[in-house]
Image (cartoon, rainbow, N blue to C red; front, top):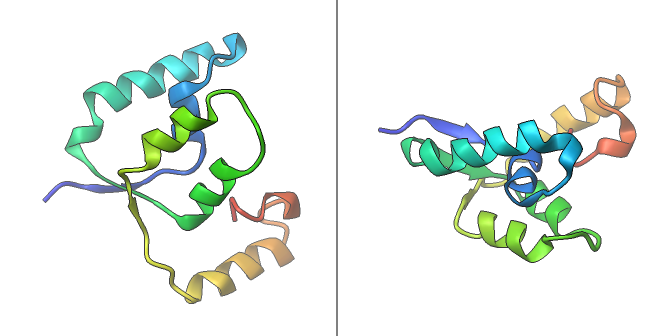
Length: 100
């Protein structure tokens, strides 16, 4: 059985990002994606899809294609309580509710 990993929005975004100031992170992410991802069972949440679908940004279609075949974690209502605690106790900035 392959190890399971959860990807937040950053990883799919870096697969198609072209910003020079992030080049090192982009290159590492793309290399991992090409060489290592097949060794893992990869998951994302609905929150990742929502965040990636928001707004108009370069390469949006490509980033959505990159996550289209990744399994989505089933929603668990217990997560809502954890998110509430994170936000109420400022463990995550309130503007980053999707990250929480």
